[in-house]
Structures are given as structure tokens and as C-alpha cells.
Length: 292
Image (cartoon, rainbow, N blue to C red; front, side):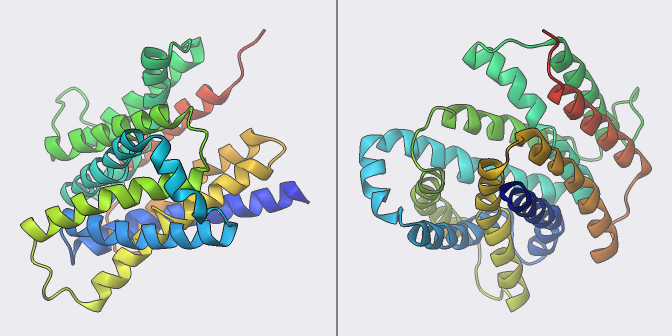
């Protein structure tokens, strides 16, 4: 019964994550990346607070913060503040069909960074995964013109790859955090809000945003930065076989490309699919257990 429930949670999370690239592009037609970050962060903080209250853990918020205030401030500055600002700007500069697969290579980045900062051993299949993954990144970024290394938006590609470093760095810093994960995530959002809201008020004009923009950014806040994270945590927690649940995530980028093509009419370059297949192949190789 628990496994069936875990798969249900996992599929729900994957399906919701599959929609966010489309939601990002829709929101960016009404808001700039800084406005999008500020508004989505407010929605996420509210949703996470509601989840924590439902779980009965909201009363631990102050005590958790008081134990390590600078640590949670640092986490909040990385995620959501800098990570999502960089990611949203990458989506602003690139077609979503390019930005999403590039960002998807974060798991390979995490392995390499864990070796550097946590002393973890890099296995042979990790090196194979890195070569496959980053070859796929180059194929996507150059639209197949690999030898010329001609990028449509070098800044956009750079930001998409920087987002993988930030996300991997966040999880490395978070690896030994013993606090409730929802409370930890909520603290990051709450501590980053003064920065994101202040920056948006200084740089952006909030007047004239239609209801469609507010609806789209609310969707991003709920299903990219809030509720979906909790669904995924529950799936991992309930599963008797974590790998079975983790493998569900490989469905996400392909559904995402389909939605981008059908909902917003984005043209998917053939090499995007080739590069994405290379990244996914790398991630599947990485998940193989070493022979003992």
C-alpha cells in the first residue's frame, strides 16, 4: 500500500514539475524575473507555512531559526533568492526548450561538487555520466553545431549552467541539516523575502500587471517552489525502493517539451531532443550501482 501511495505522490510531483517550464514562459510575458521571484516566493512561503501548520511543525520555526540563524540566511540567499533569479533570467533569454534541459543536468553537477566539497568518491560511471551529460548540454546549447560553438545567447546558457551549480551547492549545504525539511525550506523563503521584495520595488514597476500574470506566478509559487517539493519528499519517504521513485523524474523533461510545443507553440529544435536523451542517458548510467 505504501509503495502505491509513494508512486502516486511521485507521479503527481513529476507531472506538476513538467508544467513549470511552460508556466515560467507564460509568467515572463507579464513580469520581469525579479518580480516573478518576489511574487512566487510570497506564494511559496504561504503554501509551505500552511503545510507546516497542517503537519503540526509550524511551532518549531522560531526555535529552528534560533539554533542556526546565519546558516538559514545563507541557504535562503542561495535558494530561492539567487538560484531562482538566475534560473528565471535564463528562461527569459533562452527558449524554455533549451533552458529546461540545461538546468536538468544539475544532478551530474551535484556528483562532481560532492566529490570536491564532501570528499565523495567519483566512480567510473559518474565520469561516463558527466561526459554524456555535458556533451548533451553542448548539443542543446549550440543546436547541434558543436564544432562552431555558436550559442544563440551565451549569457542565457551561462546562467542556465550556473543554476545547476547553485542548486547542487544548496543541496550540499543542506545535506546534514537535521531540521524538518519543510521548516528548513520555509525559513529560506521567509529570510529571502525582504531581499527579493526590496529588489523588485527598487527595479520594477508593479502597476498594470493583469490577472493572468498573477495567476501564472501563483502557479509557479505553488507547484515549482512549494507543494511539489513536499509531494516528492513524501514519495521518497514512503517508498521501499527509492530508485523506483527517483527514476520517475526522467519522465518530466519529455512531458515538459510536449507541453511547451502544444501550449505556447514553442518550436522544439531536433537537437534539443538529442541532447536531452544524452543527459538522461548520463543520469541513468550514474544511477547504476557499482559492482562489488
